[in-house]
Length: 436
View: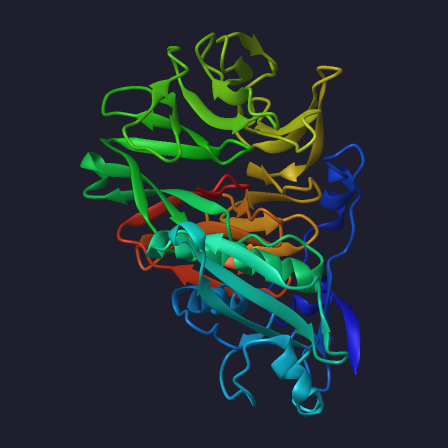
């Protein structure tokens, strides 16, 4: 028997602690048109069948794409295997000849396909997603084209993964989003900080910028083509750099203001950033900078420090923290139309907003909390999480064994895995798109 089960009930099984209802009431919806809803997903109480169970038959004439797709889907709520399958088929026609046999295996879906040469030296990846119960090819025959090199084929594999996920769940996949993060090496008093970018499966790592000192708060533009981040060199104060996400070198300084310049967040249209600056007094305030013109506008002027601004997806407000002189940061929402700020919950720091505006990830003490889900991790957290492009997963860093490591966790199942890195990892952030 399959039942719909709220994630808050399953939390006990995956060691999540349900967030405070008082916070959820105070928080409300971040988008003017969105509403809070409980996360649900199917589980099998009899242990007989998972409704999302996928048989993935490796594509004929290919290894790179198939292996990457299987790995991607296996890290979601879609249970996927390529092992011990009853048939090595490459088309829906072949599956249909043995459909009754497939219907007795317990699989809900079969993915079949092949790679073939295409014009211009490209490779065509042709695939089908078959509903086993009916034999129906869902959304018809799919074809994606790739240049014939490992990097391009890996990207195409992520595109194929996104489409398979969307066909089965009705939601967009998150595999083509990239993750930017800071990696620190050396003695903390004389460290080297490096800004890196990688695919969401931990592969295809590239260096964008490296410096003596610290790099803080990388933030992606909405199109995934630019990254803003703060750089603080020894004996200096942090300034915000802006650079192309597909090139290296450090980009340009866009906040040449004295004081601290931290926590950049792009507007939904990519034309402006919010940041926390202290150049007018010693208490940081939230500013909005128009990137092209350099026009600067101060938005907050509360008692104490205001930090970590994050635009909501509709651009009508932003979330930030303020301590009102108490040294205990709380979460606030600033209305861009009225210019008024209001508290939205209890103590919290470093808020991050989900792509649909329905959830906030933030730090409470040394724990990571996601509104509407619960306490995600309590193992030495001092940074918040970043949501995947579809909001179903988060990436964050935590300290274990004396060093920071990067973890990706599903908000639907609680399943997590660690991405291997070389040094201490800080502040991973997921792009929304714009993969090249």
